[in-house]
Image (cartoon, rainbow, N blue to C red; front, side, top):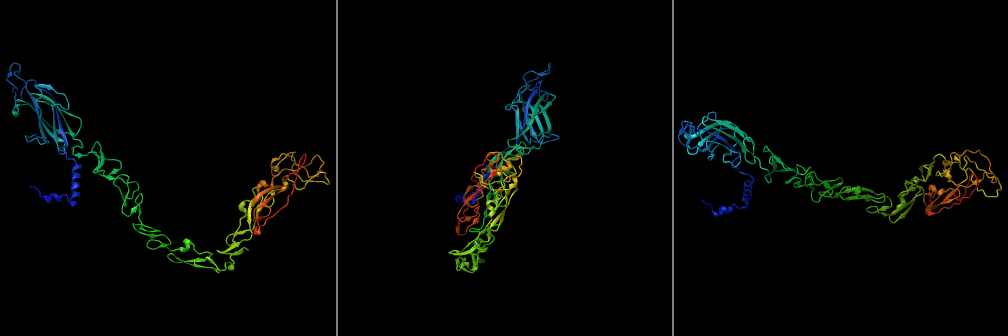
Length: 543
C-alpha cells in the first residue's frame, strides 16, 4: 500500500520539519548493537587412545581383540557446544544461550595452539544482560557419525563467569577420552558491567561530551557537566538566574539583562538619571524625576545659578527662583543696580562697582571676594633658621630657636660669640673701637652664621677694649645675608654690609617685601655695614 502524493508531500510541511529532524538526529546519535557480549570456548587437547566411541565401538572398524584397539582407522574428532541457563539437573531442552560446532580438529589425540583465528575456538554472541551463572555442554563427536549415539565423550559444566580477559581452564576425564578446554566471557566494544549491559561510547557532539572509564562510567570533557555531559559550564560568575550558555565559558544574557555576568538589568530606553532593579525600570536618582528621570528637582543644588549671593529656591522640575539682595536683579541676580549699597566688603575693604556687580579691594592682611579671608603670611615660610611662624592679622610672628633673634630670626644672638657693637673701623684710628666677644676666631675668612658651630674649641676671651694698633685688630667677616632667602615678594635680594636689600615686586613693600602697598607703591632702604673682631687683620666686606 502506498501513500497518496499529497500525504507524502505533507511530511515536508514546516510543521513536520522539526520533529523529522529530531528523529533523524536520534537515529544517528544512538547505536543499536546486535550483541552486548560473547561467550568464548577454546579446545586445547584431546586424548582418545583407543579411538573408540562412547558406546565402546571403534570410530571406523572392528576392534583388535589382542591389543584392544581399533585398527582400521582413527576418529575424525569435532566438538559441539551447547550454552544454556543455569541448571542443577541438566535437561535435554534447547540451548537457550547458543549452540555451535567446530570442524574436524584432529584424530584420536591431538593438542592445539591458542590463537585468535584457530578453528578450535567457538564464539557464542549474546544480546542480553549476562546472568553470570550458566550451564555448558561440550560433546566430542566423530565426524562420520554425527548422531548422539556415536558421540565420543560428553562433558557437562555448570558455574558462574564474569567478563574478563583471563581464560578459565576446564578438564573432562571421561571413561573413553579426556579433553581440555578453556572459556571466558567478553563484553563487546563500548559495553561494560557484569552483564555487559552498560553502554558507554566516547563522544563529543550534540548528544554528549565525555570519555568512558574502565567501568563504563562517563567522564565529562572539560567544560561540560550533567548525566550525559551535555550541559555546558558557563563563565565563572555568570548569573544562574539571568544567564545561560551553549558552550563552555559563555554567558548569554536573557532578554532584559546585560553585563559580562548577566547580573545587570537593562534600564528603560532613554532613562537619563536613573537605574533599575528589574529590566526596563527607570528608578530616578536623588534630585531627579520624570518618567525618564530627566527632570532636575534640585536646580539650586546642582547648578547654583543665583549670582551675587542671591538666595535660590527650587520651584519644580527644572525650575528655580533667585531672591536677589539689594542692588541686584535679573533671573540669576546677574545685574547690578547698586552693588555696593549693601556694603558687601568687610574688614575695611573698599567696594568698587563693576559691570558684573562689584569688586572688593581688601585692606592689607585680607583677601577673598568680600575680604573675609585672612591672608596667611606664614605660607611663604618667612622665619629663618627653623623658626616657627604664627600668622597674625596683616602680619606674622616668628618664634626663633636659640641663638637667633629678629623679626624673621635672621639676627644672631651675641651670647653665641657674635659682634654686639656694629662699627665701621677705618684707619687712622681717631678713637677707641671696642667689641664684646665671647669666642675668638683665628685669622681667615668664615661665614658669620657658622662661627658659633665651627669654632667650639677656641678659648673664651674676657671683655676688654681693643685698639686698632694692638696685636689684635679688626677683621670684617664675609657674610651673605641673602643666603636665608629673607625676601618674600621680591624680584631679587641684594647683599649689603650688615644687611640686605629686597627688590620688591609691584604692590609690596617692607624690609622683606611682606607688606602690601596701596595702589602698587614701592619701598626703598639704605645700605649698612657690619664688622667682627678677629685675630690678625681687618677687611671691609659688603654684607
